[in-house]
Amino acid sequence: MKITNTPLAGCFVLEPQVFGDARGSFMESYNEQKFPAKVHFVQDNQSISQKGVLRGLHFQKGEHAQAKLVRVIRGEVLDVAVDIRPDSETFGQHFSIILNAENNKQLFVPRGFAHGFAVLEDNTIFAYKCDNFYHKEAESGIIYNDPDIAIDWMLDDDEIMLSDKDKLLPNLKMLSL
Ligand SMILES: Cc1cn([C@H]2C[C@H](O)[C@@H](COP(=O)(O)OP(=O)(O)O[C@H]3O[C@H](C)C(=O)[C@H](O)[C@H]3O)O2)c(=O)[nH]c1=O
Image (cartoon, rainbow, N blue to C red; front, side, top):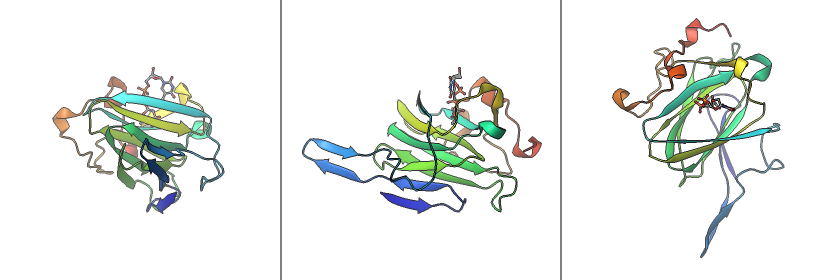
């Protein structure tokens, strides 16, 4: 397993070891004993999206904050983590990475981050582990095109498909964190 830190403290890229043979391949997609952060995941999620879908930027507030380990089982996304920890030196900065079924890369997004992804291929299956349960009342988020964060989502604006909820998200500076 290869671990690559990002410029955002606690957020890192994980590449599992892949064992190939004539049948195909095998990898441990998650192993608590080998995981380089002290975290206990309690919920697995999966979403399927067509190209152009953008989910995020989302986070859960306060005691319901979630750390996530995200990966792509089929297709490709641009995955983005935004540091919204009020005391962080990298507050408001983001890290983005291409995750796809070929590179087997995973991104660990700690608590205190907003998370989102842009779908770059049809029929993309996105799977992730959370270390805290879904709590609808604690949901919050940031609009995808916040000019202070300035994320290049690798999609043309006219092809981006947002949920009605995500269309109404505020800029980061409007949030009291
Ligand atoms: C997240 C979640 C949602 N739901 C229900 C609520 C809605 O009826 C439906 C779709 O939820 P939503 O539109 O919030 O799904 P996404 O836009 O994919 O949200 C996720 O996308 C971004 C990228 C994330 O990082 C979060 O995990 C999460 O916010 O699933 C549940 O029942 N449990 C859950 O844990």
